[in-house]
Image 1: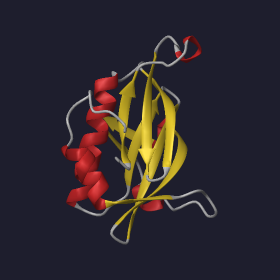
Image 2: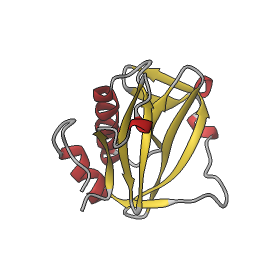
Image 3: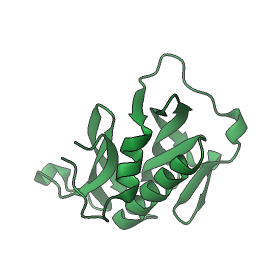
Image 4: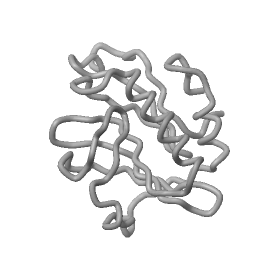
Length: 145
């Protein structure tokens, strides 16, 4: 079973069909949720590319990373990853867009040195192996088992 990834999908019900948004599944360790990704800046393929390149960045060097699920003019919904023992600890954040730099499908904090973990927030640990499996998997058609 995949324990990490961003998996585009079809809306399951008419209520999930929102104009200007795509539905995707996100798996971060034991967390599995449905997200609605704004298509105002990126296509669903761009989100997948963003997740894969960020996963590769995670594998190349332990550093603070952002995996975006929704990019809008004012806010970004993302899983922020902090290097941990043999893996990455993730927290789900909503971040003002002004605090981030977006270059193509690369997203980073404007001031990464000022970012700290949230005390008492939910955290999901993912192993480096799980991130590697996602980074090496196929394209948009990859499914979330």
